[in-house]
Image 1 (cartoon, rainbow, N blue to C red):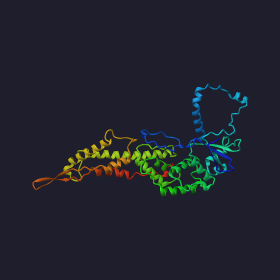
Image 2 (tube, rainbow, N blue to C red):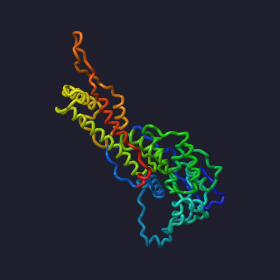
Image 3 (cartoon, rainbow, N blue to C red):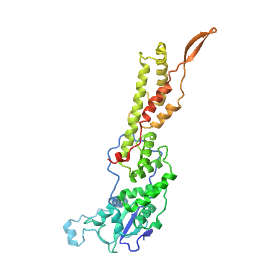
Image 4 (spheres, one colour):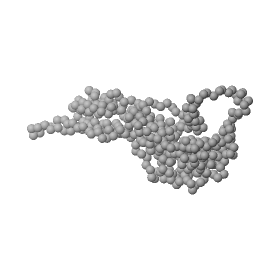
Length: 390
């Protein structure tokens, strides 16, 4: 017997069999080190549930297979003579203890989802053939039980069973399922999704730092075409991440992931290059002080030495940091520019009352560094949803 049965349609002609329901959604690893190499192109986030379950079953049986004697090989002719068919059986499999069964209508599923329409009408498909109980059996894996139930209630117009609001966590769980079954443009879910998004906008804020919730925002805003939230969330990821982001196996496009990393690295590279250029200017014997040309050497020497010390302390001096700038964030560079105390030095002033006095020199390393950092940071924007889809 399955552990849970949800009867969504009393006249159901289809059973959705959820195996291995999600117990730990999008786990965040605080100990993971940012990747220091470019990740090779990966296929779009989507997988075949049947293949996945076969793989899991094969792994479970692997230990038994290794210890047992190999089964004798039977060629195709002998198999045909024995009367055993190679075609999949129409008998329903015995339910596993941890299975969750959803009794639904194939008509409702096909009207809303291109995925279900293809699956239930594909010639030769196991799912397109009714089992001996007179129902279609379709397997699913890894979905959150409640999120799947909410979505199926929407598709079957069971409005009283649909929550008026959901939090970010639940919306992300629903987004994962919506993405897989290609429901993004489905009219059936449009009203509820809009209501949930409106409530989320009123009661939740996008985090200001790179964290798990930020990745949930990127996922949901991409799946549900929340353009302003997508731009804001990706901007935070660009500015505060210290390496390639953790996508947490969410349906975040590979292009989005790679674009965040590219923009982050481009901005850091620009800042580092301009800081080195500034260092070269100060270290040049032809440096000319803009405040007082008569003390150009002293001014350049002071600024050059101070900047060398700052860059050495930050680890930017030797070796010069290079892509992918692991453990370096734009936010960290910004904070250094903002919080670093400016160093003052003076030049001899006029001789008065038998003593020399000094006047603070106006050339400022702090303002020069901030000008570089602010100039780059002000041009760092989040990704646009349209470009991330290309």
